[in-house]
Length: 110
Length: 111
Image (cartoon, rainbow over all chains, first blue to last red; front, side):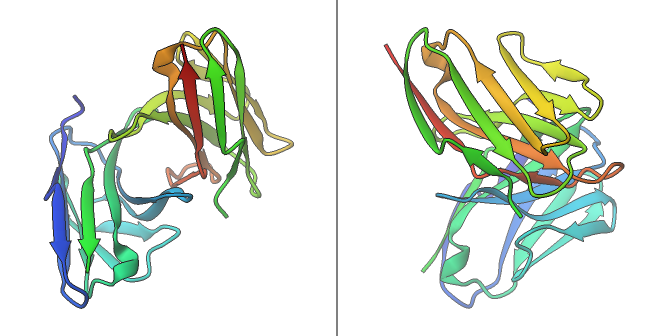
Protein backbone atom coordinates (compact mmCIF):
# COMPACT_ATOMS: atom_id res chain seq x y z
CA UNK A 1 0.00 0.00 0.00
CA UNK A 2 1.10 3.52 -0.79
CA UNK A 3 0.13 4.87 2.63
CA UNK A 4 -2.77 7.09 1.65
CA UNK A 5 -6.07 7.28 3.48
CA UNK A 6 -9.22 9.32 3.10
CA UNK A 7 -11.81 10.31 5.67
CA UNK A 8 -14.69 10.01 5.90
CA UNK A 9 -15.29 7.14 3.49
CA UNK A 10 -18.98 7.91 3.21
CA UNK A 11 -20.93 11.05 3.97
CA UNK A 12 -24.49 12.20 3.49
CA UNK A 13 -25.16 15.89 3.96
CA UNK A 14 -27.74 18.51 3.12
CA UNK A 15 -27.59 21.30 0.58
CA UNK A 16 -25.97 24.42 1.96
CA UNK A 17 -23.87 22.76 4.67
CA UNK A 18 -20.07 22.94 4.70
CA UNK A 19 -18.16 19.70 4.19
CA UNK A 20 -14.47 18.91 4.61
CA UNK A 21 -12.79 15.82 3.25
CA UNK A 22 -9.38 14.78 4.47
CA UNK A 23 -6.55 13.07 2.63
CA UNK A 24 -3.62 11.79 4.67
CA UNK A 25 -0.36 10.30 3.41
CA UNK A 26 2.52 8.67 5.24
CA UNK A 27 4.93 8.81 2.28
CA UNK A 28 6.15 12.39 2.49
CA UNK A 29 5.39 13.02 -1.18
CA UNK A 30 5.30 16.55 -2.48
CA UNK A 31 2.37 16.34 -4.89
CA UNK A 32 -1.19 15.62 -3.78
CA UNK A 33 -4.41 15.75 -5.78
CA UNK A 34 -8.18 15.82 -5.41
CA UNK A 35 -10.38 14.34 -8.14
CA UNK A 36 -14.07 13.73 -8.49
CA UNK A 37 -15.45 10.82 -10.44
CA UNK A 38 -18.84 10.87 -12.09
CA UNK A 39 -20.36 8.53 -14.70
CA UNK A 40 -19.49 9.65 -18.21
CA UNK A 41 -16.84 12.10 -17.05
CA UNK A 42 -14.10 9.88 -15.73
CA UNK A 43 -11.75 11.51 -13.24
CA UNK A 44 -11.75 15.29 -13.15
CA UNK A 45 -9.09 17.28 -11.33
CA UNK A 46 -10.44 19.68 -8.69
CA UNK A 47 -7.25 21.04 -7.11
CA UNK A 48 -3.74 19.86 -6.57
CA UNK A 49 -0.84 20.78 -4.32
CA UNK A 50 2.87 20.84 -5.01
CA UNK A 51 4.00 21.60 -1.48
CA UNK A 52 2.92 23.01 1.86
CA UNK A 53 0.73 26.03 1.20
CA UNK A 54 1.25 25.63 -2.57
CA UNK A 55 -1.90 24.74 -4.46
CA UNK A 56 -3.37 25.24 -7.92
CA UNK A 57 -6.76 24.85 -9.55
CA UNK A 58 -7.84 21.98 -11.73
CA UNK A 59 -10.62 21.67 -14.30
CA UNK A 60 -13.57 21.79 -11.92
CA UNK A 61 -12.48 23.96 -8.99
CA UNK A 62 -15.58 26.16 -8.66
CA UNK A 63 -17.29 25.57 -5.32
CA UNK A 64 -14.23 23.88 -3.80
CA UNK A 65 -11.30 25.12 -1.76
CA UNK A 66 -8.24 23.29 -0.46
CA UNK A 67 -5.61 23.69 2.19
CA UNK A 68 -2.29 22.06 2.88
CA UNK A 69 -0.67 23.18 6.11
CA UNK A 70 1.36 19.98 6.55
CA UNK A 71 3.02 17.70 4.01
CA UNK A 72 0.90 14.75 5.05
CA UNK A 73 -2.56 16.33 4.93
CA UNK A 74 -4.54 17.80 2.04
CA UNK A 75 -8.03 19.03 2.87
CA UNK A 76 -10.87 19.59 0.41
CA UNK A 77 -13.69 21.87 1.53
CA UNK A 78 -17.08 22.41 0.01
CA UNK A 79 -18.10 25.73 1.52
CA UNK A 80 -21.80 25.27 0.80
CA UNK A 81 -22.57 21.86 -0.64
CA UNK A 82 -24.88 21.53 -3.64
CA UNK A 83 -26.55 18.47 -5.14
CA UNK A 84 -24.24 18.75 -8.17
CA UNK A 85 -21.33 17.95 -5.86
CA UNK A 86 -22.69 14.49 -5.14
CA UNK A 87 -19.84 12.31 -6.35
CA UNK A 88 -17.03 9.97 -5.45
CA UNK A 89 -13.93 11.92 -4.44
CA UNK A 90 -10.46 10.45 -4.82
CA UNK A 91 -7.27 11.78 -3.37
CA UNK A 92 -3.95 10.83 -4.94
CA UNK A 93 -0.25 11.29 -4.29
CA UNK A 94 2.54 11.31 -6.85
CA UNK A 95 5.31 8.86 -6.14
CA UNK A 96 7.94 8.77 -8.87
CA UNK A 97 6.15 8.31 -12.19
CA UNK A 98 2.83 7.14 -10.86
CA UNK A 99 -0.09 8.39 -8.87
CA UNK A 100 -1.32 6.31 -5.95
CA UNK A 101 -4.98 6.77 -5.20
CA UNK A 102 -6.78 6.66 -1.91
CA UNK A 103 -9.85 4.46 -1.42
CA UNK A 104 -12.29 7.25 -2.22
CA UNK A 105 -15.04 9.12 -0.37
CA UNK A 106 -18.63 8.75 -1.48
CA UNK A 107 -20.41 12.05 -0.84
CA UNK A 108 -24.16 12.47 -1.21
CA UNK A 109 -25.70 15.94 -1.00
CA UNK A 110 -29.46 15.86 -0.48
CA UNK B 1 -10.37 20.03 -22.47
CA UNK B 2 -10.53 16.48 -21.13
CA UNK B 3 -8.82 14.02 -23.47
CA UNK B 4 -11.33 11.92 -25.38
CA UNK B 5 -11.05 8.17 -25.21
CA UNK B 6 -12.41 5.70 -27.71
CA UNK B 7 -14.17 3.39 -27.71
CA UNK B 8 -16.32 4.24 -24.70
CA UNK B 9 -16.90 0.56 -24.04
CA UNK B 10 -15.75 -2.76 -25.46
CA UNK B 11 -16.56 -6.41 -24.80
CA UNK B 12 -14.03 -9.12 -25.60
CA UNK B 13 -13.64 -12.84 -25.30
CA UNK B 14 -10.60 -14.16 -23.47
CA UNK B 15 -7.61 -14.23 -25.78
CA UNK B 16 -8.83 -11.43 -28.04
CA UNK B 17 -7.03 -8.15 -28.55
CA UNK B 18 -8.20 -4.59 -27.96
CA UNK B 19 -6.95 -1.08 -28.61
CA UNK B 20 -7.95 1.93 -26.53
CA UNK B 21 -7.23 5.40 -27.85
CA UNK B 22 -6.67 8.69 -26.04
CA UNK B 23 -6.79 11.93 -28.00
CA UNK B 24 -5.90 15.36 -26.63
CA UNK B 25 -6.60 18.84 -27.95
CA UNK B 26 -3.33 20.02 -26.40
CA UNK B 27 0.28 19.09 -26.97
CA UNK B 28 1.31 16.30 -24.63
CA UNK B 29 4.40 16.01 -22.52
CA UNK B 30 3.56 12.60 -21.09
CA UNK B 31 0.72 10.10 -21.04
CA UNK B 32 -0.14 7.77 -18.19
CA UNK B 33 -2.51 4.83 -18.26
CA UNK B 34 -4.54 3.54 -15.32
CA UNK B 35 -7.00 0.73 -14.80
CA UNK B 36 -9.86 0.86 -12.32
CA UNK B 37 -11.84 -2.16 -11.25
CA UNK B 38 -15.41 -1.72 -10.08
CA UNK B 39 -15.59 -0.22 -6.60
CA UNK B 40 -11.83 0.25 -6.36
CA UNK B 41 -9.32 3.04 -6.86
CA UNK B 42 -7.44 3.45 -10.16
CA UNK B 43 -4.12 1.64 -10.44
CA UNK B 44 -1.12 2.73 -12.52
CA UNK B 45 -0.25 0.69 -15.61
CA UNK B 46 2.35 2.65 -17.51
CA UNK B 47 3.84 5.97 -18.48
CA UNK B 48 4.92 7.18 -21.89
CA UNK B 49 7.20 10.17 -22.10
CA UNK B 50 7.87 12.62 -24.87
CA UNK B 51 10.81 11.28 -26.77
CA UNK B 52 9.68 7.68 -26.67
CA UNK B 53 10.61 6.38 -23.25
CA UNK B 54 8.08 3.92 -21.89
CA UNK B 55 7.86 2.35 -18.48
CA UNK B 56 5.36 0.00 -17.02
CA UNK B 57 3.42 -3.19 -17.49
CA UNK B 58 5.03 -6.24 -19.05
CA UNK B 59 1.87 -7.59 -20.74
CA UNK B 60 0.29 -4.36 -21.90
CA UNK B 61 1.91 -2.02 -24.36
CA UNK B 62 1.19 1.47 -25.57
CA UNK B 63 2.23 4.02 -28.12
CA UNK B 64 2.54 7.79 -27.98
CA UNK B 65 2.22 9.91 -31.10
CA UNK B 66 3.35 13.37 -30.04
CA UNK B 67 2.52 14.93 -33.39
CA UNK B 68 -1.06 13.72 -33.35
CA UNK B 69 -1.39 14.33 -29.61
CA UNK B 70 -2.60 10.78 -29.19
CA UNK B 71 -1.79 7.64 -27.28
CA UNK B 72 -3.04 4.10 -27.73
CA UNK B 73 -3.10 1.22 -25.26
CA UNK B 74 -2.77 -2.29 -26.68
CA UNK B 75 -4.22 -5.21 -24.77
CA UNK B 76 -3.17 -8.46 -26.40
CA UNK B 77 -4.43 -11.95 -25.58
CA UNK B 78 -6.79 -10.45 -23.02
CA UNK B 79 -7.44 -12.17 -19.72
CA UNK B 80 -10.44 -12.00 -17.42
CA UNK B 81 -8.37 -9.86 -15.06
CA UNK B 82 -8.14 -7.13 -17.72
CA UNK B 83 -11.78 -6.19 -17.14
CA UNK B 84 -12.24 -2.70 -15.77
CA UNK B 85 -12.26 0.93 -16.82
CA UNK B 86 -9.14 2.34 -18.42
CA UNK B 87 -8.13 5.97 -18.14
CA UNK B 88 -5.40 7.95 -19.80
CA UNK B 89 -3.89 10.75 -17.76
CA UNK B 90 -2.15 13.52 -19.63
CA UNK B 91 0.41 16.13 -18.69
CA UNK B 92 0.52 19.02 -21.12
CA UNK B 93 3.25 21.16 -19.63
CA UNK B 94 6.79 20.09 -19.01
CA UNK B 95 7.89 20.62 -15.43
CA UNK B 96 4.43 20.42 -13.95
CA UNK B 97 2.54 17.40 -12.73
CA UNK B 98 -0.95 18.63 -13.41
CA UNK B 99 -2.77 15.57 -14.68
CA UNK B 100 -5.91 15.72 -16.77
CA UNK B 101 -7.61 12.38 -17.18
CA UNK B 102 -9.60 11.13 -20.13
CA UNK B 103 -13.23 10.14 -20.15
CA UNK B 104 -12.55 6.44 -19.64
CA UNK B 105 -13.08 3.19 -21.56
CA UNK B 106 -15.03 0.32 -20.01
CA UNK B 107 -13.61 -3.04 -20.98
CA UNK B 108 -15.21 -6.39 -20.17
CA UNK B 109 -13.55 -9.68 -20.91
CA UNK B 110 -15.79 -12.73 -21.09
CA UNK B 111 -14.71 -16.35 -20.62
